[in-house]
Image 1 (cartoon, rainbow, N blue to C red):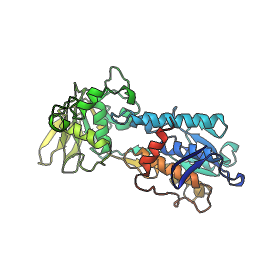
Image 2: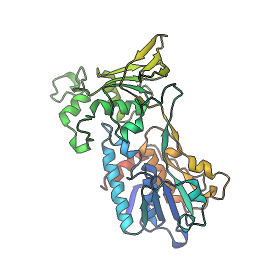
Image 3: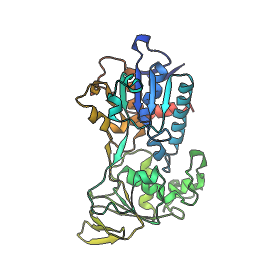
Image 4: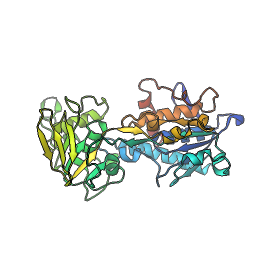
Length: 372
């Protein structure tokens, strides 16, 4: 069976000649790692997928919890099915709860580790920690604590950083009910509430079908969303489906937005001291502070391998290669494209990224979701 979702990308089962089959280790089972592993195993390579977590999915497990991103459940389900099929066919092995370190990669005497021709590093990102005194206070959480580890968050919240993740976290907190602790999947969204949340008048009585005022019913939190940059919050966010959500946040009464902030410190009570753009000092009294100040690539394995005999075998993809926003589509595209070309001798680390044509990433997600 041939999977074709675009003229130059054809994923054909067992299509590579025997002498080009490689033993490949993939470290990290987020969007990039899963896309690489399933594509490479499908076309005939021998793949072992490692993840230090007890589940596959990486950042998908965060993204799927954000209102409006429920389709990631479907994408994750698709990959989960592919991985199970490839495992039962003996083409792919999954090793969860296994953290790969550089020593493992270079230890070629050990049969287990020495057998790999290529190492694909798909270890994702680390949250960036801004230089603010007092961040070691127990009330300070990162977005990973909240979205991945389901940390309990109090009613009054300060969110540091108003990029895509800051908005996603605010959106999640407004809608997520700690009491039920249940994530909504795409088929559980209440259409009426969804329309009014997005400012659409379901009765069509209003001109243009849009409600004058967006109200989020019983928001679960009071949120202060801040950024250091001056100017409107959310102005630079991409025009994906998310921008409508951001419009909701802007119009909802539950979120105060403050641009041009200088973060002074977190005090011993866990409150945040800031200076506003007008030079006023202000103490924001909160139950929790959530850091959404960007990410840095987790490319430690690649860094550690530099200058060693393993260096020429290490390829970094996804967020570990370039820490953009939680951009699953780009990561999947990058993993898929590299997997199709990995046995080509001209594809060496540093020359291993293949740019998608505009719109191709969207097509790929659409394509995957047809195969649920």
